[in-house]
Length: 92
Image (cartoon, rainbow, N blue to C red; front, side):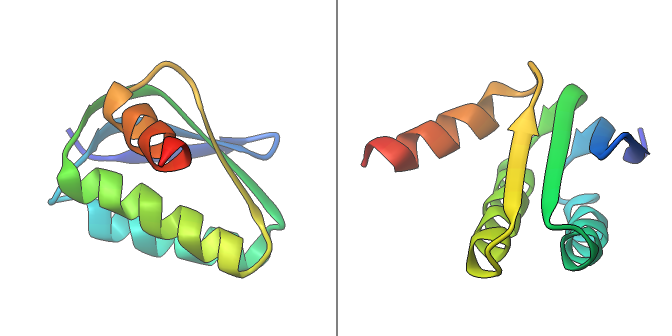
């Protein structure tokens, strides 16, 4: 399944898989989005799969947003790997 990104009222809704095949286009898209917006919210309710490359993409986007003093939020009940990764780093 191809990765689909839709924007509605400032929230970007992701549908599909964020993996080694789609993570580069995901990163490219959101790098441009971060340049244009001060605040970016990504909803992952419809993400069916995420692999290590996908998690790394989210981590890089979060780091980029932080470096540029922008807000980057992940919402939804999608893949737990993302939440585990971010909560692990906050606890450490």
